[in-house]
Length: 594
Image (cartoon, rainbow, N blue to C red; front, side, top):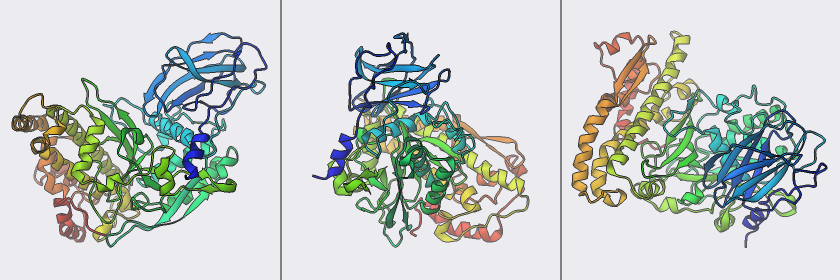
């Protein structure tokens, strides 16, 4: 039997309590529980400064975190619960003095695991767990950290100009200033779509002391997915706390190496940074990536379970070429899945770096991972599904009790409105650049390179986003017919599918007129559109991705109207001619072959 899953399980441990030099905090050793870990930050707590606590569990939720002070006094803690699986509880301790504090994870009124946390240099206690490799312990903590990083109410429009305000926010980043060196205050964090998962993985490895692996890959072509070379392995962070400069140096190497093809490798390939996951709720943890067949990459951050009054949600984040980061919900208009020979699309996990024979760092094979990876087993089941079956399966995972047709429609409309507003932010980023560089013209690449290139075009154009937006509009239009074709996916409550279709068609006509969003025109003023107006302007979005055109033209305003009156910039005639040549790609919503 392959050794990797066995070793990963054996190293999934809970740090045991060490003897206390001062009586009071604990009289008995902490119970060991291989499914519960308690992490603290900063790495070396000091009296009078808050200590963040995060319990991470893989066998079910916990109810509370409790604390006992050095003198045996009970300390009240307010806990915030998230996830499942893995589950986490977060709290904060404000230790008034140095000493050993006992932290207990409670379930059913009993302690199921605990840790002794030393506050102050003279106190004795156990430090944070040291997984040493990407075993289940490390992966569970990573998933909980990602979920906390992008936590917000599900209805919130979570968007940032880059990753920097996320990483530099102590309220979001559990590992902020973990070393106590002010190491995050000026940390550059501007990854794009492909770099975002690698940045977060490397950042976590830096703070926790884990190895990092990445590969150079080509972009594929001629009907084949990308091919990758041998892994670049770095164990520098396992040797003790590293400097910010060391992290920045490694991240520069990673950013210069990986690209949009890195996640699109074939599902059966061995030389990859990612391996495919089974389509099961237990396998899709926060931190898993989604590779769409055309190069975009998203990262899962949260599951919201279905309740009697609310549909379930699967939330993810992505980064754009302009470095903006935003949260999105899973639906067919955002998570593209297609049967194409040039990509291995779907949900994937980072291939873990584990200790092999003689202490060597090794990446497990697909056969090893098929027996049982640290998060989930290797599986190519996604590749066996037609797109319709893939989306049906995901719908069952997100809403296992099915959705009433109106719920399904409103969730799709919310997602489309979210995409429109996010596009408005991207268009405004391009406007902002050209306001600062009057008279500049962003060079436009030729052919399929408009979707994958470098420089200003990558930063400020929106062809991939607009392709996904046009697909999303088609998906919303198709929902009434989808109800008739796949009635088993909906909670019809005895209603005939044809009657449900007619009701949703009427609802659609009304709600797209009521739902509104706004964009910024060339003069800085705001202009409001309805979703219905945006959907009626699809032809404009087929050539609306060029940042050299004014915002009004990119949103389909007609010359001679009040909306268009503020437009003062147009793409060069040669670029407009090529955009017309490429229009069929967008009209048919099919990206060209490389």
